Image (cartoon, rainbow, N blue to C red; front, side, top):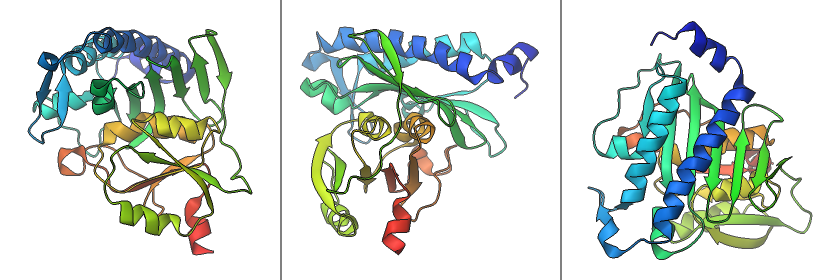
Amino acid sequence: MSLSSSEEKILNSPAALCNMIKRIARQAGDITLDYFEEIGPGDITRKDDNSPVTQADQETEDFIQKALADILPSVPFIGEEAVSAGNAPAITPDQEYFWLVDPLDGTREFIRGGPDFTTNIALIKNGRPVIGVIYAPAIGELYAGCGEGTAVRWLEDTDHEKPITVRRPPREGLTVLSSRGMGNADKQEAFLAGFKVRKLVKRSSSIKMCAIAAGKADLFPRFGPTCEWDTAAAEAILNAAGGLITDAFGKPLLYGGREPGWYNPDFIAASFPWFEETQA
């Protein structure tokens, strides 16, 4: 990949680029919201792995891909639907930059009429997410981060953006997040036995990790299949807010399709270095 001088200038201004991505995410989220209000059984099909996909997924991804290409035409685009269709470009280990996008994270939530679905856009640099934007159009919340101390939350109701940061683990115990319908409950229970848990809250999509970034929750252990586009934007935001995502051994996640299907390992999202507590 050879970047033009104008592209290099954009990439060297992460805050300005993040603002561009926020606008794209809000526009993309509005597409999904239009479908959300009118979705019917005929709008749903199945992928090879039997997971659901809607016309909203594809139309939103197409919009995001074009909008990002207008800004940085040389940066490869990896989207969930392109990967599923076998149309995604190959990402080599020496690829410096690429986009990693989930146009509609939480499709099952979307289909059942729940509000916890999001549009996730991340910029990856050398295998790590450096900019992340997540928009939840049905609840009117947008989260973004582009480096340490830059995490923000925007609320549609007030049209106002505020800085966010993770909180210290409360003395009375942790608020732990869990995916709706997640398997491997035994693994989760065994992992949580090492922590003082106050309550367990079930939510869908990457909005869970945004809640940690905003200081509303503390821990999200995920033992089960996810893909890189499910975590990349959230990790950029969580890192910017002072939190972290690691694999189940406390090691950083790496992005770039190293596993077939772009699958993640089991991972832990937290407001604190959780692995230090389990080793204490």
